[in-house]
Image (cartoon, rainbow, N blue to C red; front, side, top):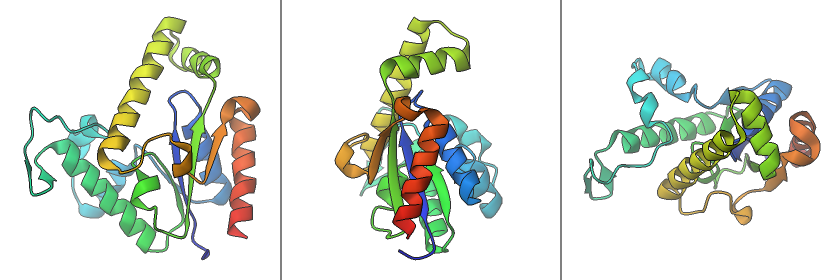
Length: 197
C-alpha cells in the first residue's frame, strides 16, 4: 500500500459510525467527507448544489425518471454520479481521506489504498443512542432507525453490485456496542495503522 490511505465507513443508523469516522479522520489529520461532500463539489465546480440536498443518498424514483442506454434523468442519479466522480478524482489525486457512505466501498473497491469498514451495533444500543440524540421515545427511535437503514440499504444496493452490510464486502465489520464510540475508533485506528504498515 502507498502512503495514501482511504477509509470508507458504511454504518447502520444509530451505530455511531459517523462519530467514529470523525474521530478517525481527526486522528490522522485528514478530511472527512459526508454530507459536506455537496459543498466540496460545489466549491470545486463553482456550482450551487444546495437544491440537491433532498436527493443526497436517495434512490432513483422510477415513476418520475427515464432511463436510456444506462443513463437516468433523475436528480438522484445525477447527484450520485457526480459524487462518485468526485470520490474517484480525490482518490486519483493521491489525497488521503475518510468518507462516510456514498457507496465509496464499492466505487473505490479496486483502489489498493482503500480500507472499507462497516459499523453496526446492537438494537438496544442504537435505540438508546437515537433516543438521546433526537430526544424521542423508544418507538420513535426504532421507527427512525428502520427508516434510515432502509434508505441506506436501498441506495447502496441500487447503485452497487454488492449488498449493503454483507460482511464479505468489507475489510472489517465492527460492533460499536462492544467498545463504545471512542473505543471502537481507537480499535479501528490501530487496525488502520497495522494495515498501513
